[in-house]
Length: 179
Image: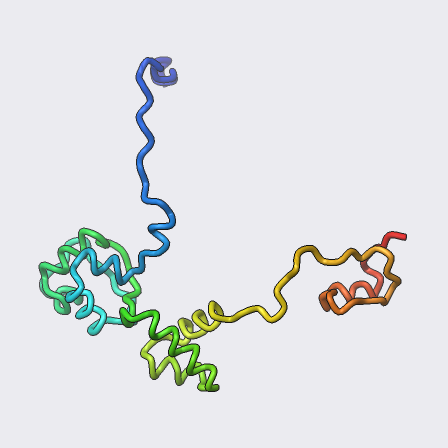
């Protein structure tokens, strides 16, 4: 290594401005369906979902007329999608009507319909049904700030607000208590 290559670059240049990125909030609210629709159009996105919805699909960098995506939506739309997603594997959404389906999942589960039956009827995965139900669940006892102090309690004395593992350790004496 010569001495010239190990030196720091000259500082007489002005620093380049920081690149502008999309805000996280904008990116978080954009669904894959919306991104596909922006790249190939709404009609082609609906056709892609109808043909290949629910599958993980490789989007080739240069699709040919015989590729799966080109057979579904046509070569021109496949080329447009390759510009946006080329080289990626996408989990193609099953439907574009997410809000209505989420409401139906919650309503069907309230009627005690099984998870597998809901997934089969609404053409989605069981994992998605579990996810929607978990996101729609309201906690029974929301936390009210800090937990009460354990000072001044005798060994074995517990409270209804003390969690079960902590109460068990209190009974066994594994938690040192202040006197």
